[in-house]
Amino acid sequence: MNKKSVRDIEVSGKRVFVRVDFNVPVEDGKITDDTRIRETLPTIKYLIENGAKVILASHMGRPKGQVVESLRLTQAAERLSELLGKPVAKADEAVGEAVKAQVDALHNGDVLLLENVRFYPGEEKNDPELAKQFAELADLFVNDAFGAAHRAHASTEGIAHLIPAVSGLLMEKELSVLGKALSNPERPFTAIIGGSKVKDKIDVIDNLLNLADNVLIGGGLSYTFMKAQGYEIGLSLCDDSKLDAALGFIQKAKDLGKNFYLPEDIVIADDFKVDANKDIVEVGNIPDGWEGVDIGPKTRAKYAEIIKNSKLIVWNGPMGVFELEPFSNGTREVAEACATTEGYTIIGGGDSAAAAEKFHLADKMDHISTGGGASLEFMEGKALPGVVALNDK
Ligand SMILES: Nc1ncnc2c1ncn2[C@@H]1O[C@H](COP(=O)(O)OP(=O)(O)OP(=O)(O)O)[C@@H](O)[C@H]1O
Ligand SMILES: O=C(O)[C@H](O)COP(=O)(O)O
Image (cartoon, rainbow, N blue to C red; front, top):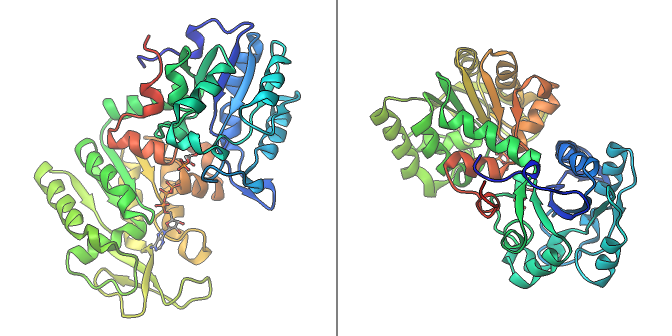
């Protein structure tokens, strides 16, 4: 990476503003997956051990510039304190006089977590005034929030122009793993794209067609491709505005000589419920009133075989409605193939990572990215503003 990292700069005695992504799932006031917090520990420990005064900042959810009580970072501070085995002070705001006083009171090696930066309207607008207020708290900016690196916000991008700005160790790891894999991929390289949001995945499919040898499509977005080819899809998810784009990808794959796979058979259901009636049909045979909810057994076996014979696998998005047990087999078999293949497996955040956790296969993957949207944008070949703004080596 051509950007400076926290290892390239003196941190001892310095006030260091560290942007992290503690946007973790919380249910009934409890954090249900603390992966993103655990993944920032190397940077935070490095700073503590090297005598920095650590000021952490994060967003949580999308409060749209207002204080939302349920989106405070109190639980994150508690969890971080448990993981570090030392107290973590928590501010009730992210800027202002009270915060300044808390920063002034820090000793070398102390840790302070600021309140949710998205409680301020200036954060998502990348308001220079808010960026200045963040910058005034610190001598140095460290961006370790890979998950938010695709956002040009005051605490991810604006601040980087005001004080020395370097990457954290998680940011460095994510960029290095994803960058190495995509710039010089081991082949065969297989990309698996699933999930439900066709619009969000269109650009990544486009770029992966350039890079990968095999592109496997599953999940809710596969029905747009089926409809585009003239197949009946019943009530299945479809984005009619993307039918032409879908046909364009099928043609692009042909033109580039790439293998582009769509499900051959589908698990269908007459409702979006665990106890719905279900059946397995070939593509084109989804009856009226039914919808596709998972890839079928033939497709599962084919996809698993391709994954097993690949040297590099990038997976983003589940193959079906894996949250409901009867429709989880496609995602489970893809996850198992990713876990057992000898190829290098990268999981691109979000729901696929949650699926790997659910099937107890997460520790068998080579790299699970902490970025959902960020890893997608990276794979699309887009520059990440939170990275671009950091100081060059
Ligand atoms: N056939 C289907 N019909 C409807 N929904 C589906 C289908 N297959 C998968 N899904 C749903 O897609 C959702 C995930 O879609 P999404 O596009 O958000 O994936 P992701 O990229 O893994 O997540 P993230 O948004 O975190 O990047 C899951 O909740 C899953 O139930
Ligand atoms: O969960 C994520 O992908 C990141 O924390 C970014 O969140 P955002 O999509 O609300 O910007």
